[in-house]
Image (cartoon, rainbow, N blue to C red; front, top):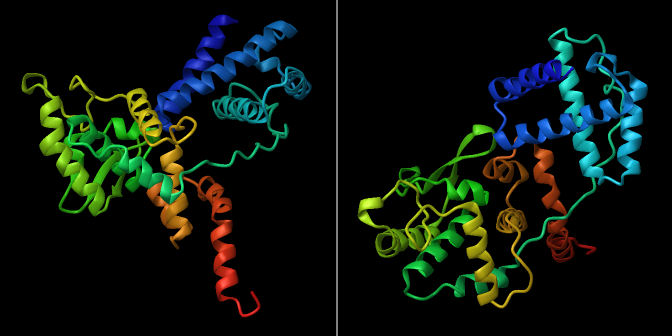
Length: 300
C-alpha cells in the first residue's frame, strides 16, 4: 500500500506544481492533509484509497470535530481531500469521489487588524535618524505601506525590479504569479535615500547581490528579518503588541477603501485571484461609510 500511496501522492504533487502552478508552501499543505487522511485509513483498516466510501469520509469528518480541530483546519483538510480525489477521478484511478458530498464547515471570519493613520505616523517617526539602518527601515516601511505587498514578496525584490521612471515594482507573488505594483512620492524619496546613503554603507562591494533590502551585515534581508525590524519599530513607536506579517498589507487595503478606492482596484493591487479574498476588508470601512451617510444623506 505504501508504494501505491507514494505513487498517488507523487502524481498529485506534480499536478499541483506543473499544471496548477501552486507554490511549494501550498503543495506542502496539501501533502500534510492527505498524509493525515492516510493515517486515518490505516487506523480504520482501510486497505486502499480506492476502498474509501462516503461513510468513511463522514467518519473522518466526525473524528476531526471530536479532536477539536479548528473550523478552518477542518475545511482545508476536506478541501484538500476533495481535490485529491477529483484528480484521481480524472486520472481514472477511482470511480467515485467519496468527499464530493461532504459539506465543509463555514470558515470562521477573522477580522484583519490594521494601523490607524496616526499610528502609521508614529511608525514613520521611529526611523528618522541618519543611520544607514534607519534609512533602510524607513524605505522598508514606506514600500510595504505604499504597495500592500506581502513580507515574503518584499524580501524577494531585486534591484532591477524597481522602475523609478514609472514608479512601479515587479512583484513575484504566490503561485509564481507576477504583477506590477505602484508606489508614490514618499516611498520613492525614501527608497532613493536608502539606495544612495544606506545600502551602499551596508553592503561590501565584493559581496554585493541583486536583492534590494539587506540586513546590518549587508546580506539579503529575510522575511523573518523584516518581521523583526517591524516589531522593533513598534517598540520604538511605543505601540503595544506585535506586528503581524500582514498588518501593513491590511492597513494598505483598509486606507485605500476608506479613501474611496473601488474593490476591484484593491483586489488587483493586492494580487488576489478572487474578489471574495478582498471583501473581508469591507467591514473595517463601515465606520467611514456611516460618517459619509450621516454627512450627506438629507435624513442622516
